[in-house]
Image 1: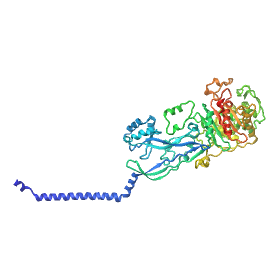
Image 2: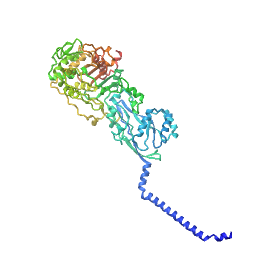
Image 3: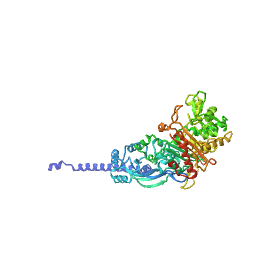
Length: 632
C-alpha cells in the first residue's frame, strides 16, 4: 500500500484535470457564441424574411364565393333561386389513409361509385393548399349528425354549407332557362380562375350559360388566422364578394305552364313572341326534365333514363328541332310571288288535285285529293291549296323564294340570347351545288314552294318570321332578357352589352306595300273564312287572328297511295304545325306550334296544332287560362 502511494503523482493529475476543464469551458463558450450568433442572424439579420414566412403560415388569404344572381319572370315570379346545401368534404392535408377514410364514410352515409369517382377526379384537379374537396352533396340532417358524431375518428372530414342553385318550378322552364352544374377543368380554363376560386358551379345551358358573367358576380377575399393544421381561428380582414346581378326575363310563368298542360304527353314545341319588342313570352319543349337533378351531379340511373328515352326529353325542340315548315311558310312564298309579278293576288289557277311539270311527268299531289278547282291567292292561303304554289314556284324559280326566305331569317340565328339555337341553312341553287354537288331541279322548286324538300326551320325561326310578318316587315330580334333588377320588385334596367351584341337584320321593304295586306288577308281567311282550314279553331273569337296551318310529311308514300295515319306507326305520322299572330290590327303575340307526329286523319295542322294555338291566344289576350282541350 505504501509503495502504491509513492508511485501515484498528484500534481500531474491536477494539471491534467485543470487543462481538461479549461478545454471544456472553451468549447462551451464557443458553442454559446455560435448559438448566440445564430440567434442574432435569425432574429436580427433575417428578421424580415422569417417574419414574412411565419405570417404566411399563420395568416392565409382565402376566396369567398359570391351569391349567384336570381332570375325572375316578367311578373316578378322567382324562377331560379339559391338555397343552402350541406356537403361532406375532405381536407387532403389532414387525411391520413384516404381509402380507410372513404370506407369509414361509406358506413355512415350512402356513397355510390359515381360519388367516389367524381371525388377522385376533383382531388386530381388544381386547388389551393388546405382547400377542401367535396365528396357528396345534399346531406340530410340525419347524415350530418352521423358524421358529426364521428369527427374524432375521421381527421380531415367536415360538413360544409354553401348555396346551390334551385329551380322551384322544376321541369317547367329547363329548356328556356337552362341550368347550372359542377364546373369542370375545361370550363375552368375558359373563365377567370381567380374569380372562380371559391365557385363550384357554372351555367351549363340556356340563359344560365349565356348570362354567366352577369349572374356569377365578383369573388371576395378574407384574411384568416389559422393553426398549424390550417383550421381557421379567426377572421382578420374581409372584402365582401359582389353578388351576381338579378335578371328579369320576358317569360311569363303562368303562360309557360299553361302551354305545358296543353301539350301534355306529346312531343311538341311552342314559341310565343311579342312582335313589338321581340320579347319571348313562352318557350316550351316537351317532354322535359327536372334541372335540379343536374346541379350537384345527376346519378347514373337518372341520366341513363333521360338519355335512353325514345321521347328525347333532353332535346330542346324549340331551339334545335329542325322541321319542314310545310304550308306555314306559304305566306312568305306568296310575298315572293307577288313581288316578282309571277302571279297577282287575283290570278286564278286550276287545281284538279295534282300538278305536272310535263304532260306525262310526275304528279305533285295536292293535300285534297280531288283538288280545289279555280283558286286565287286568298283561296290558296285559306284552303292551303298546294297546286297554286306549285304553279307559282315552278314559274318563279328558286331565286326569289330563297331571297325572300332569307329576309325572314331562314338560315340564320337572329336571336340575341339563345346560344343553343340552330341556324340551319337557306336552300338555294348555290347551296345545293356546294353541299350536295347536284344541280337544282324544277322539282326542288316545287317542293320548296310548299315548305318541304330541303327546307327546315326551328320553332323559334318560325315564330320569328311570323312576328316579322305581323310587323309588316319590321324586324325584331327574339330575346329573353327584359333587364337587370337593381332591387327586388323594381323596374328592370336595360342591359345593352348583351342585347346589342348582334346587328339587327334589315327591315323588309316591298316594292308594293299592298302585298303585305293581301297576304295577311289570306291568313285571316285561314281562321275566319268560310272554307279556311282553321276556321273551327277560330270559332267564337272576339278578336281577329291571322294564321296558317301546316302538315309536314315524315315518311314518303307511294304516288297513288292515300295517307292513312292509323296504318302508320305513331312516329311515322305527319307533323302538325301552326303559326299565327293576333289581334291582326294591333299584334300583341306571334307564335309557332309544332306537334311531332300529330297528323291524324289528314288534318294535322288544323286539327292538332291550331286548337292549341287558339287556347294560347285566348290565355294571353283574354286572360282565359281554362284548358278547353281537356273537355274535348
